[in-house]
Each structure stands twice: as structure tokens, then as C-alpha cells.
Length: 66
Image (cartoon, rainbow, N blue to C red; front, top):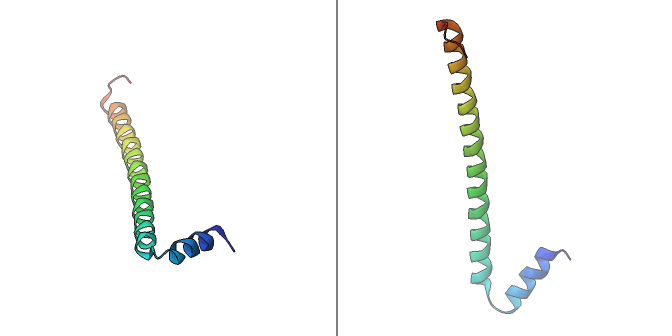
């Protein structure tokens, strides 16, 4: 019996099924938030790299020193 089954059995035996459902919902929502923030940070990093490369390109083609 794995740890999740043991926890679920303990909660169900005490009649706290609503608490188990709330825990599962909160865990899922927190996981989705963490995944969304990770993707947002990665997109921000890629955009920053793009802007830096664009600025470098513009400096090279306008004759300004780096």
C-alpha cells in the first residue's frame, strides 16, 4: 500500500471526505500555478534574449559602438 492510499484510507475512515477533496483541489491548483509561473518566467527570459539580440543588431547596423 503506497503512502497516498494510506492517507486516503485514514481520511475516509474518519469521514473527512470533503477535506480530502479540498486537499486534492488545492494541490492541483498549486501545481498548475507553479507550472504557469515557470512557463511565464521562461517566456520572459526568451523575450529578454530577443530584445538584447535586436539591440545588438541595431547597434551593428547603425554604426554605434557597443
